[in-house]
Length: 425
Image (cartoon, rainbow, N blue to C red; front, side):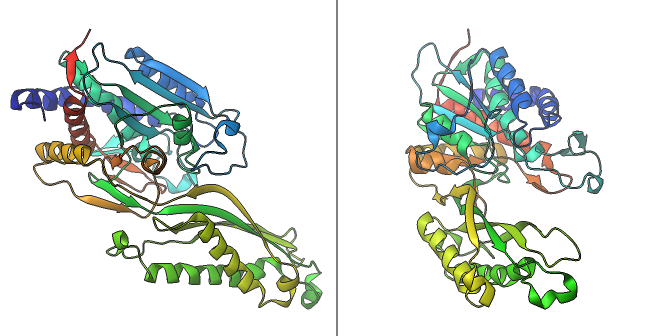
């Protein structure tokens, strides 16, 4: 930790820049960065990094470069406009440890606009809350990464270790953006991912898998419905069987997840089928997101899914002879437990206690983050630590401004100690 006098100055420097930081975050939220539409927001991030004097690397992800790497998830959309941005700070006299500050620019769809209090990308402040799609998940975190170093610069210092500011795409669906950063060669002694963790340290997260089940039926006029096979209704027992597998995994829990009420979640997230209201539907496809525990082999997870679908299908005379097709797309993400990197963890705990006046609590994620890439495939301890946010992926998403302030202070103190400081040019 910096000495007491410098610590006080760093905390104040964050406060002095807070209004600018909130305004910046709101501006970033107003740039819709849905999947495949992130380029404008990434241009904004690239300019922000360049203005700060960082070396900017902006590149389009090439699936061929990453498709054979551990952690890759299959995609069924074009990456023609999928851009990553990394800004790198290189000190004049490198004497401190290096750091990755990672965040994702992509946001999830808004859902029906009439269910938002105000338009989802019309970012605004009400009390302690900054609202808008992506405000918490996780554009506030991207701003925290930049403004933590800005606070040090305001005092006439810059980090004395390498820092890579990563703004990645695809976190919400594959993680291939973070994987592309590893393929590009970015490494550091540790990583902080400022996801909305509720002012806590992410210590474990589940694995996540996406797949589709495609069912074919036999069409018929509804006046003679018994002569056909209803593809939509045939999905119901398959879904029920998959929820049975979900229940089994929730009973047999990983030790890190014993205190979680329902760590494993299987969710039917999309379904479509049929062509005509007066015809027995000849097809139906449903998408499902499932989770698994750290240490579960993804091949075993896929095998369990396939056996469950096959078992349910055998109970239908039609499906037994016309088995459903399973297509994997999107997340093929392993679970991750934060292990090693005790020096970084202890420092973050100390910084957090200085700011909050209380011990840093751990958080177990029943979703996934990009932390897995660094910890599992690059031997880089990845700490998920970010502000309080509510309604992420929901309506009226919001992030706490006071939490933004405190997390920025903690990260600034961490950087000052981890990387060391040198006089700014």
